[in-house]
Amino acid sequence: MEDREYIIGEFVPRDGRRAASLLKGELNRLLTGTGWQTCIKKRGLRVEYKPVSGPFENSGVYVTRARWQIQADAGRLFDFLTGPAGYRVIDPACDPADHRRPPL
Image 1 (cartoon, rainbow, N blue to C red):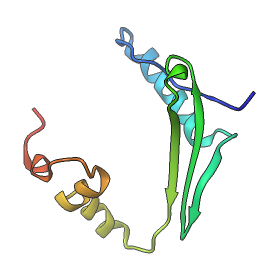
Image 2 (tube, rainbow, N blue to C red):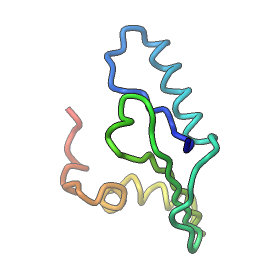
Image 3 (tube, one colour):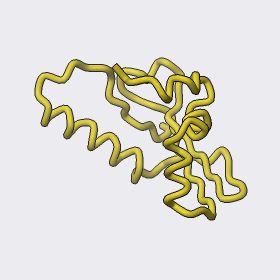
């Protein structure tokens, strides 16, 4: 059987500490787990994927992770990614005008 990644389903957190512990565990598995397959590897970019288990197992969706190294000043990169242009890079389907609107 292929290696699958357990993904927590949607839930209403009734105990904040328990919810945080569950989510932290999932994040740790996603970042450090083994069994990932590489689908793209070029010019400093590596994209990996894994089928899922748990509540989303029958969806046919894969979980992905990516790493990309670039030569850039960290402060300038942060400023770019947290500005309207970077917002558009992170989420191409967004409305850049939303970046300047208050969240609530």
